[in-house]
Length: 397
Image (cartoon, rainbow, N blue to C red; front, side, top):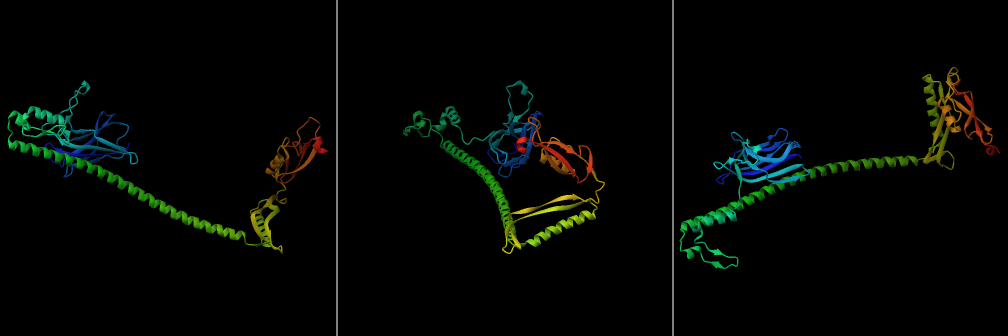
């Protein structure tokens, strides 16, 4: 889990705004076995406070328990445990709403325990959730204990019929001032409950607005990035299209055959000159040129096709410079003709072939039977090696 964002509305025990109080959001650390503060702040002029922990401060070392405290002696005053929770998976943020908390003064008390292991815990309960209205059970208890409070009040049963005031049945008269006070108190409680409800709705809307703003900012940033990438991609596409058009135009342009051959010959001659200047005992020879395309009617120019042919050449040793160059002849007996040719070419030797008929049931057709010079002997670089291959009698006929 990432960070935690906790909200609270702190009131005094008289229902007034508790402004300027320093609050702490604490999580229980499993390894240290104690509560640890993860965020601190002060309530504003309306008694509101938002506590935001650092990113990833609540990890697997923390128990799934959070509480709201303020400084106290000898231990912190605990205002609330837990609350309404909601987790945003995209932002990896846990939202915690403690709601409306009444800050207890003289009525604060020590938290009671039922397990002896908590006997030494010195934790005080210094806050209580604010009830939006007096419960029906509490009202019934109040009426039963003080029957004169409702003597002059009119009651209505479930069927909607009016029931005589209790004063008419008992003959007890309630002081008008007391009746007015009760009615005013009820209206005030109703208004307070409505105010608390509206404050809670305002907090929810504020949080939704913050989340929506963050999502809008992220979406706007992504749109900007995508537009920039799209513009760059369009520019690259245009440049590539121009290159393709240029290449297609060049491939359709007729070229003089003499110019093509002269250019290739110049390149070969230049390569031979460079090897000669570097005292390399080699030269390019046996150049083969394969031109493919559409030749003009006069035979002087050609338009190269999709398959433009190619150029092949051999690296020939310069006898004047390699008289003393000797190489070790490799063993090719048992190899096929193509394999033997590749092995000999790899060390700078040529191969000449001969064939010998095989007796029925002896040897493998197509494999080398013998060679000259023999394997491991030395031969001049560029010289030929005679290799005899076996063939069946049927092939000979």
